[in-house]
Length: 82
Image (cartoon, rainbow, N blue to C red):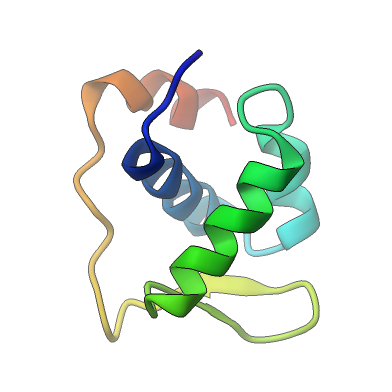
């Protein structure tokens, strides 16, 4: 499956919304995104303040700075499966 960078970031934000553990997110997205894509995406989301790290393995969407992006139809099935 070929996802754009925006799709990857959106998918990550919805995964973070479901699970707050970085390790769990990597596990759930295994097979959809590479571990490197997940790590790079999380770093990008933290740098743009859309996600914040609140512990060594705990991350959450930074809803005080930004809303969750609209979920494209192409990603709804993936989000439901994770």
